[in-house]
Picture (cartoon, one colour):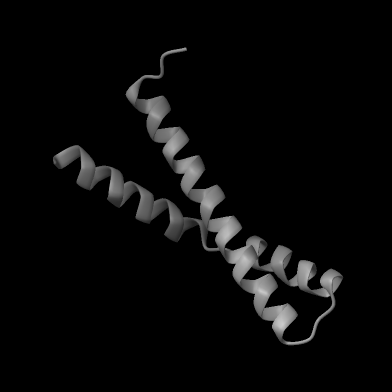
Length: 72
């Protein structure tokens, strides 16, 4: 399956969002566990962090990165 440029951009954006979600979840889970929460409580904190993630910021950062690569 060949992907055109727009498909590649969409996949790059989806990957950036997935990566940001995983990163914030791991960070918040680890912090919650270090603060003494049980695994279930830490998982709830991680889920809340993913829900609160500023998706606009992630999208803007990815679009900015795409724009830089397009100009290179």
